[in-house]
Each structure stands twice: as structure tokens, then as C-alpha cells.
Length: 86
Image (cartoon, rainbow, N blue to C red):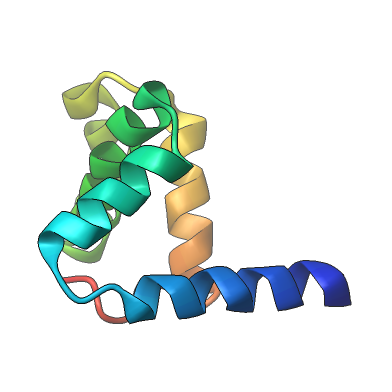
């Protein structure tokens, strides 16, 4: 776990070092597969809708995704993540 946390911090440092949208886009394209990149906006939308008070079932239906994906987002919010997402 300690090694995983250290690796995560290194990745976070790289993200923080990127100064432009172009740099970030290039980095994301290199880091993630096209399929993974397609999922990122959906996951962000899940978090936004949950924070707006929409039901998990409605979000899953609207976005045509599994309820488990929405539930995972809800659990991460309960852990205190996504505080800066509006």
C-alpha cells in the first residue's frame, strides 16, 4: 500500500506540473486507452449529478450505465473525495 501511495503521489505531481490544456490532453491520451478516456467524462458526470442530489437509479438510467458504476461514485463521495467538483 505504501508503494502504491508513493506512485499515486508521483502521478499527481506530473498532473500538477502540466500548465496548458494541450499538455494535459497529450498526457491523458498517452496515459489512457481510448476506451478509458471515453469513461472519464461519464464518471465526472456521475459525480456532478450525485452532488446535485439526483438518485443513483436515475443517473444510471439517463447515462445508460450500470448502477454499480454510479454506486462506486457515491461511495467515493462519502469517503470525502470530489470536494472540488461542482
